Structure formats: structure tokens, C-alpha cells
Image (cartoon, rainbow, N blue to C red; front, side, top):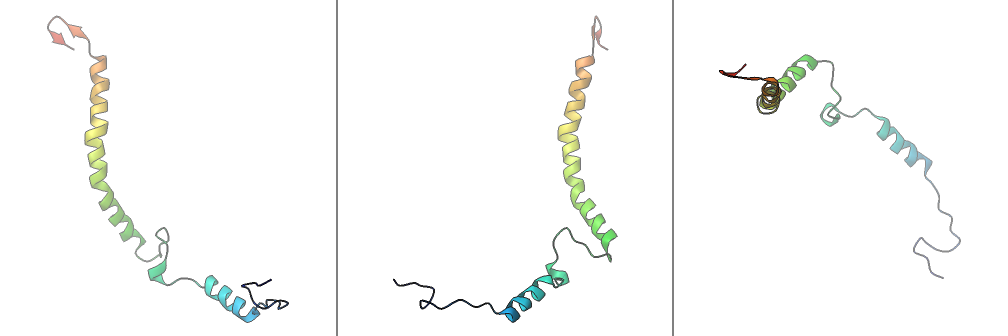
Length: 88
């Protein structure tokens, strides 16, 4: 019977030097450009935090204005009482 893995009876051999080289490459620390998004170098960490804050501010303000403010208004209106002259 024919096999696509090679001639019959031939045992596959592992190249230990090639495996060790691959392990060495995997264990190396990646260059600065290839770091994960969550990893930050110590230099410039405060500046990056300020940049993140600057990007988050417009969205936070939008949520406060269009989500939190109406909810607060609904709660306030629900506790108003009706009087003869209007609402108190």
C-alpha cells in the first residue's frame, strides 16, 4: 500500500538542533515594535496614560450627557409631587 509520508519502513527523524533553534527564537523578547498592546515600557508610561485619557474623554462626556443625565431627570420627576399651584 502506498503512503504519502515516504517510503515504507523509513522512520521519521527529529533534528534536535533545529528544534532548539526554534525554541530559542520563541523565547526571545520581541522588539519594541512587536510588543502586545497591553505591554508598556517604563519610559513614556505617564504620557501614554494621558493620551488614553484624552481619547476616552469625548465618549465619557457623551455618555454622561445622553445616558446619565436623562436617568437622573427621570428619577427626579418620579419624586415630584403635584400641588394646586404646580409641581414641587
